[in-house]
Image (cartoon, rainbow, N blue to C red):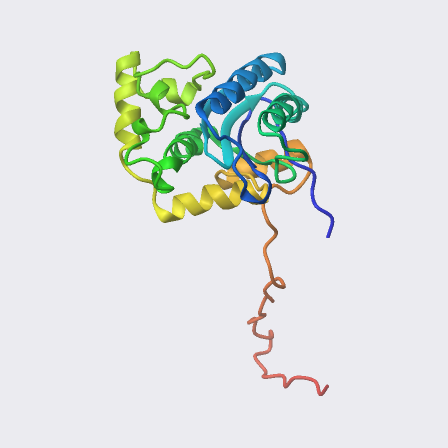
Length: 245
């Protein structure tokens, strides 16, 4: 079956995953992380995306971003790659691709899942054993969200702003949420939706997206439709035997 084109919806939040080819390392030292973030910041500005959260792992990246048009997300990812890959190849005397095919992305129901996705992203180093707590890992947006280190790359989403009336209130509320690990079910839900490209949200959100995009945004239900059993009684009350086959 042909693969559906990647779903991109302007002004909706998207969770993006880009992996290194064959799980190879894509950042080898702090200069690599810094260079990538600089290009990401420039790319987001150039192609009009708002970045709400991120983490750079040694072999993959996660982004939470809102594009302003249909083309901006793909163009930003392509542009950042065209800047970073030649830099990385030249620095480490290598050739060829760095990425594992196309990036993965899903549209996110912000009201219900933005904070879940943000925590999923920023707690990735903890789940991977690279840090005991999110604050120990320097290459994510976590420190920005708890007010410890403002990050010029980040545009705070309105859902984050709704956490409190003041910056201090928002930062404390976010930190308290982040200190609670995601459940196994939440991790699996976010991961599978993004890797398979299905929308992450409530049923009414998905239905609205399907109407807007004129396509499926979630997997079709498997199996044949259930047969409707006719239990009606004939008007005369007679028991009519079934016809012979």
